[in-house]
Image: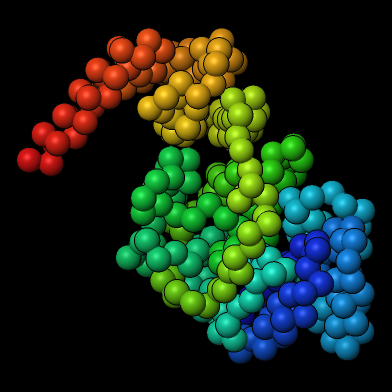
Length: 314
């Protein structure tokens, strides 16, 4: 299929890397694409570099906007890409190999809306239900919830896809991916397994490295996650939001009760209420850890949990 692909690059504080990023996209073996560079009010010289490339190559469009965050920068790029069948995102400090777009496009078809390059799945497709479960629950062997190394049919992007509060700065990509999956009417997601075609540059200054969550942040995040599930799908998928919240809960109240007054937070109270409403059962030791902050009782529950794990391995 000779689909036209929009390669959308949000640009912010990327002066050192943006030229290398653009060059890697221009070098594609698959030629039916356009590049949309969204300068999200970057304070360095990255915006000028983008303009220089646009002046030399008609395939490049540069959009300059006041700083609105990476989610809205991607949204603005999608809005511009009305002449494209598919969308892919590349971060401005990353690069792609020459065959990147060709590999993604070869996996697309009339029966596929989403293509993901994932090394944890050894199958050419995965059901939409399994894909959504993997996004919601995460964990070992799950699908990468990020926006890059994926190909999306443009029509999946409705107004809700990017309708995410700006103060959600970690996990917003997963929310977008969940909403796009629900928007797809196709039953499967295409999988390619090509390590090395997308190069992620490690950035020790990124917000994901320094970010420290709080119960208040998790509550706001989980509200957006729950709002992503269509009402007719709630009974099928809402249990996965409970699993997701329990993982977050363990960060605050795992082996130690790290957050004082945790049981009085809206995050805890709503999680407990939803577990009761959906009859979500915890193993005995986990139930004690969830409900009790007495250090002696919790210590005994942790020992019991460890013993049960040993028996499961026998």
